[in-house]
Length: 242
Length: 208
Image (cartoon, rainbow over all chains, first blue to last red; front, side):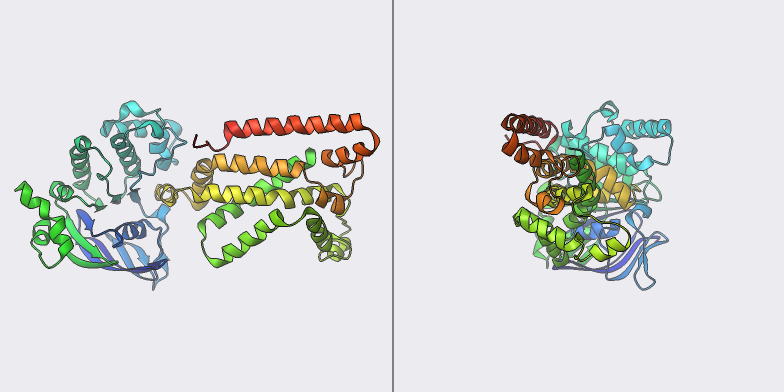
């Protein structure tokens, strides 16, 4: 089993304490848990927004955080693609400029061409000159994903990527993301509240509660755990689908 | 109006990074800094004039040091600009801080993960996102600086051609030539209306 993500982080964010130990193989990882359990905080810590008080974070073979060795790689050097809940699109830039934002080392022509290619791959090539404010939720999601993929990230972080979408667009987006998760050399950590996301991606599921990992395993393994009321409720739609 | 423009440049150049810092910190030192920033808003302008004299006057805190360098601030154009900065800066910093606070942390984090340094994220994302508030704050600060009277009179005097501002000129003209006072006042009214119109166009959108 090749190790994809190894982390052992302790961080305080205001009154909230995150204390997470995790070791997962390559492939998608889904974070589940009740509101306030630390899923988004963990995602932000992986992106570099939360500086841990102690611990270590290794992505693939690259050490991003080692507090004892005074190593904390800043967000811009982590090679991380981050999609926050609200998509985080820059409203003052066109869709093309949003996607090209991380490509500032390329020439203007190269940036434009790469942005066009990425948007075409997402089925959003017609939106090039549009401002994000006029886009639908599904379109915003595609643009934000194209922008995150533009830098060819080794680690993709997605915070509830299907939550705000219409039912009609949700399955389409799941499939779009599933294609990204199977790319070689790419790790993905996804926060979700929807069991159908797990069925589409077949990730390693990590159950967080009060800033700590309570359980970890496959969808099948966690769906059979009955000692945690949250897990029972979370996986209850599976019964109806069967 | 040249002094108010220079004052505005100083306010924006120094106030924007300060407002950004204040907007990102919620701890007690920032609250104390905010208290100092807000103080000139509630203090009478004459008290501000005394504070400036106590700081930059010959017997003031920095006076002897400035004198040793051959510099004297009171009753100069520099004094006019300092007085205008003092009264205008709080309005800019408070408005800009509120504007920056409304900028989602995630926008900055996304920019950083896309390779932007903290300064690039600030200039390319935070400033455009808070742009309307910055314009609004700059307009308010400029208007306040233009209308400044008490602190300028005490700290810079009312020397025609040297430290006399339009507001002070209205005051002086009232005693000598009412028509001239009306004319200068009219200029100030036109400037104020133009400013309000510009703020309507470029400032924050009202909810209505």
